[in-house]
Amino acid sequence: MRLIIAAVGRLKDGAERDLYDRYAARFDAAWRALSLGPIKLAEIGEARAATPQLRKADEAQRLLKATRSADVTVALEERGRSLSSEAFAQWIAERRDGGAKTLALLIGGPDGHGEAVLQPATLKLSLGAMTLPHGLARVVLAEQLYRAATILAGHPYHRV
Image 1 (cartoon, one colour):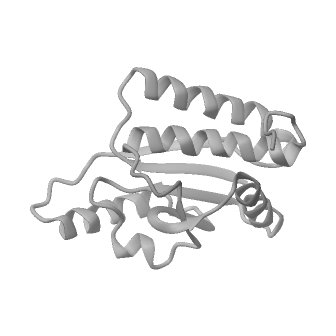
Image 2: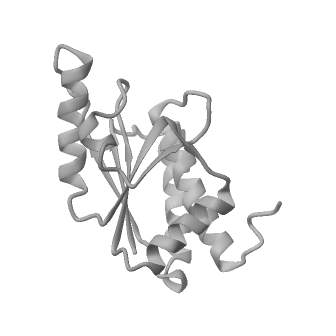
């Protein structure tokens, strides 16, 4: 199952980009035995519309366009479900084992996601109760995907 992280905004070179690249590379190195990956990153620019609703609608359409090949969509959402790392790994494995070919994980802009993303999302996922900058959310998501792969592989990276 391929993975797409589609995000509003672009990571600049620096610490966040380096950390994202590190965990994405680790995931990609481990994925073959698990029938997961590789991870593709699709970045879209922030909308310039006058109102938050119009910005969210524009960004939602572009996120959906970037992930139109996905069978399963996860919207990162502050009011979404909070899963443990083990539960997240199991959730991914269930989708993979159920025949999904592509899993898309969508990170919205500063105003959040538009309804066009939220309404059909298979899972609305929260990374926690605290607000994270979008670049850091990308890093946390990449690390959790790598952690999920190690959990599924029985690798000692994840310790309880």
